Length: 144
Length: 246
Image (cartoon, rainbow over all chains, first blue to last red; front, side):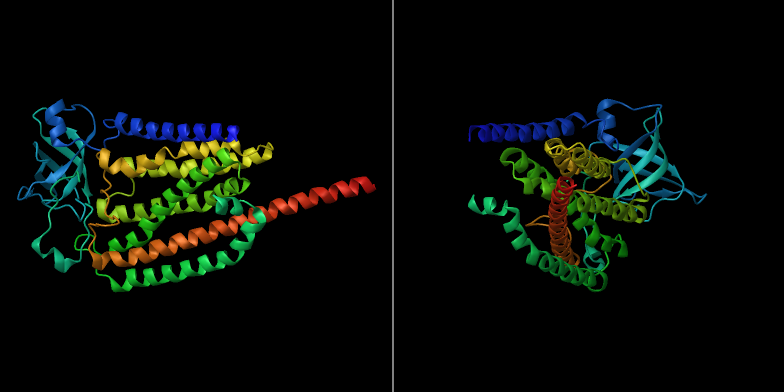
């Protein structure tokens, strides 16, 4: 009986250690594991210049401008704290639209603007039939 | 816990598992069939994703079972280490293969959904990467169980690995909350979901169906492992008899 209790204690300790390890990994990797920079991060920590990064946020309403050449566009990415103007040349995914999430791959320019080489649409967690979306849904923020 | 102890007896376990296996299996197939029919023909398309949304009826259950499978392995490992129930380790071994298959299905369906929705098959995003790691951890567990068997081990090392591997479960669960990820946040909750009920309902059927099917497969595999152990023991006995006679 005593050995079993000892194993029980050890088992519970192991479970606690595993839980602690998860929390440590989650918080320690918070910066490294971030898939993208948000405009607010850039404002706070400075521009990550000279390397390929991803910029994520919401496409500001009314900000998409398609240029005359037909393949270039400009738009503004915001996260409510700061905004970054983005220039992109290429094919955007179908779900790329205003007031919706986007992740742009590319690099920052010294003036704080961003040149994207690829766009990914970020889908939010809301799903609904078309007739319900009449009021034109918008994603408020990338963080729930 | 008298009931748990009673189940730890392989003979009694078999008596319950034998009729339960086909019951779980066919109930699962039935629910799954109904859910798939509903999801493919009865629900509206999503206003943004269009028809692609229907992958959710497979993707969500496979993700759930990929993760629940490892929870099962971790709990079984713990029970095995503390109470030394031999059936617990047999359960963990039986879960490993279907769990890995479901984790792989989750990754595959997610990738197929990601191409039209995000515009990419794969990204090294926190959620995607941690789920891929879980799949590798499953493969590692299966290899470790086999190696432990070959060395005549008692299953303690795979059990420790089973507990340690569960470190990934909260990371997968909270990756979309704590980190910036491409993968969207939690859509489905017990009380509140951000998926409209008209789209959501078949998911409960596929979720229940896959879960019963999974349970049926695990019971089937547990019975196979028990039968094989018994056959091996009998062969060994027979070999001894032959040696004595010779």
